[in-house]
Image 1: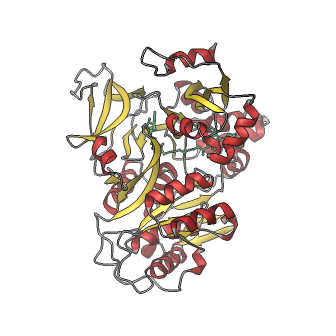
Image 2: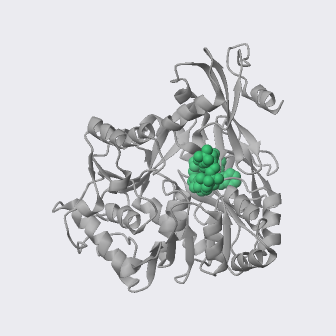
Image 3: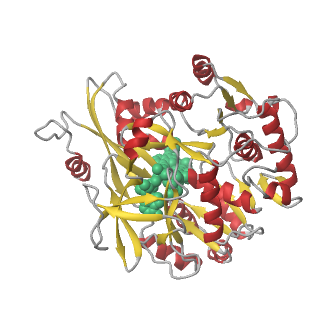
Length: 497
Ligand code: MLC
Ligand code: AMP
């Protein structure tokens, strides 16, 4: 790997060290290097570069996933990891936005519905083992400004947008966190977060593999399985969303004193436990500390810009706060008309410049343009500064919901619900919830008889389970203002009532 920006140097230096453990299957760095080489050479198949071809893939957390995300970029392509839990309609949207012509997936994830989608868009489906055999080329065709990764994010405008990160921005995200959080070669981290978002992809998988540490892959979060591994002192670092820590604490409370102490001792022995992707309530911070003696390192980030704010690795970590800008990140806070706010106690929207910033929304120059003002990316998150530490107050838009760490667009869920033949009007909001942060709730005006169970079943065919409303309210009309717009704050009190 010469003449190109450094791209996973650990693959050539890691040798026999363990890169990943998948079930009982350990994979060393030199094995991963060979697998990446197969993907790179197999995709290139004699060509010099994929020239930003968007190669989509649908694999669970596994060495295959790791080989694909690293190998596609090494071949000059853009990796498009898709959610293994997405509905066919959601996959169709992502594949068409990305304009992919190849989708890699294992046999078990094939389905008739997905084949229909692929036929419609002219996409060939292949298993990683279908790629022609080959070895890592001596020189990689990658450049710093080349697109490397597309991750889909929900936005206020509705359908998910494809956020393009470059080789330079991915490298900046990874190297900055390795430095800031003291990643070491002997670190071991469990990976149970979904692999279509930056928390799982970048903060866990790519940081660990770049640094030469080990990742233990789990198909999904299972409190009992993860806690048993923690009790066996398998991990040195743990990263999750607040909902997962709530679930772990609930599980700990079901254990006998002896069993609970084994698990909490495992957590206490770790060098770092990180919370992020959604606000960590102070009560959760304190309960975690009382069980495990660990003070969370809470950080703030976003798909478009990676991690921006972080409590210190060494130093005081303040509950309810997300710390200071990471090295290289510049932040200002602005009011509704874009003027900088200098009073730290006055709420302002976070505007960011950073080497970790995305390049564009794929195929959507208008949204890309609108996301920036004078080169500053507007996050939509409102914050104050208390004694030098940022505190997130909430989001500027009521239409962005954070549930279990997933960012959801109320407008996207509403648009899908309006496709139901009996739904005439709908408004979706997030309701505060101790476990999920926010719960998706929908108020609907319907034609004819329809109940929550029926409409929930219908939703499950159309959207990922985590988007399906959990609370329903059937009404004759929705609360609207003089302009006819639904007054969502009023709707919240309907649900609370
Ligand atoms: C699962 N369910 C959810 C949900 N996740 N419902 C609402 N919101 C969610 N987030 C549904 C399941 O489909 C299931 O429905 C029911 O809830 C209970 O399932 P569970 O088994 O108890 O939950 P589980 O499936 O284990 O999922 C919980 C979770 C998951 C917390 C593990 O939500 C998760 O992995 N969240 C992390 C998301 C994430 O990585 N976000 C990072 C984005 S990047 P039923 O009816 O079938 O039982 C980002 C930037 C940054 O934000 O700063 O990091
Ligand atoms: P996503 O677009 O999925 O990457 O989600 C990014 C959003 O998650 C941010 O805009 C914030 O609203 C939210 N977020 C991430 N980390 C935190 C945190 N520590 N506290 C509060 N909100 C957070």
